[in-house]
Image 1 (cartoon, rainbow, N blue to C red):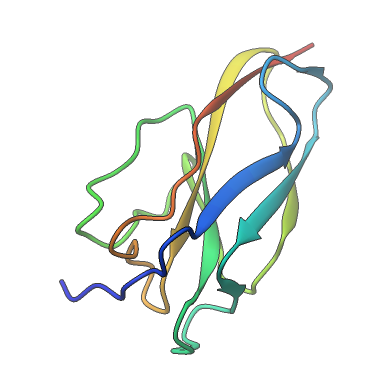
Image 2 (image 1 turned 180 degrees about the vertical axis):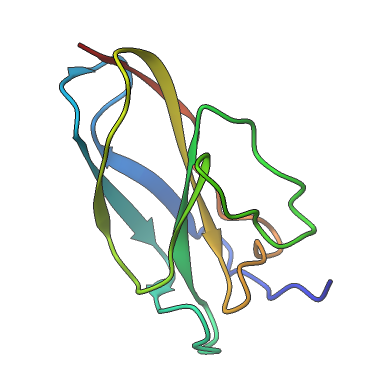
Amino acid sequence: VPRNDSPAGAMVEILSPRDGDVVASPVKVVFGLQGMAVAPAGDPTPNSGHHHLLVDVAAPDLALPIPKDDQHLHFGQAQTEAEITLAPGQHTLQLLLGDTNHVPHDPPVISAPITIIVE
């Protein structure tokens, strides 16, 4: 699968909640992106992409399109935050930027995973 390049230093992060936070559901997740622009799926603008939130799952194969299911949430309208409903307990969240076709960039722009507790 063809992959678009990402610029040196590009990074994505979860701005809120923070690692270790205890939260209530629904959880407001705020996405951060540096060194690239947020663009909707289907927009081929260079050095841009859209967010995918990985919930309670390891990163997928970074050479293939990102799956779309309950654990791989797509934000193809260029959203920079979302409210997600999570059951009580411990959860991991991770952001992965996808290109116009939902394929991770080369190199991938992926955050460190965080762990939160939902009361």
